[in-house]
Image (cartoon, rainbow, N blue to C red; front, side, top):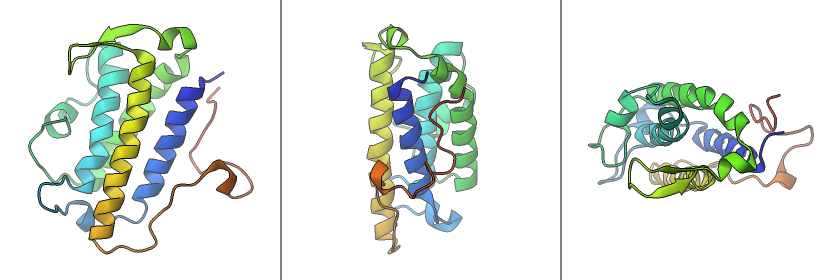
Amino acid sequence: MTHPLVVQLRFTRSEWLRGLEGVSEADAVRHFGRMNCISWTVGHPAWQENLNWIQRVQGKPLYPELNEIYAMGAPMSSPALKDSLALWRGVTQASEPYLDSLTTEKLQETFVSAMSGTVRSVGSALQRTIYHYWYHLGEVQAIRQMLDQRDLPQFRRARDRPRGGLPAGFKIDSK
């Protein structure tokens, strides 16, 4: 059975994609002051997931360019949205077997963070990843408002989902 925190991450990812619906390539690369553009922001959580679930576990990054373009502190850039989404999809798909293997015991295992040098648990890294998505989803929605986009996706609570099930692409258990 999939751990509830992994289910929460998958729900968060589905809301992330829903929050990007309707963003054009042209709008995705617009910058407002020193804010990162939407396309960079799409690749940024892929960088974090690559670091947490692939690079740390398997010992090498799946996509080394994530560390160059989308890392925290990377120079401002405007990658194509289609490229950022392709990297994001590749990382999230590649991370699924590891995420499916997580149990309460495995979530309590610790590692030294490559970024801060502090000891963290796998569970705290998972929670931080979830919170990180929501932070950047809010940022994306703010940029979209500055682009004068209307009728933006709103957070969907479980009771607000249409009858017939979960959003497309959302899976509770991959087994």
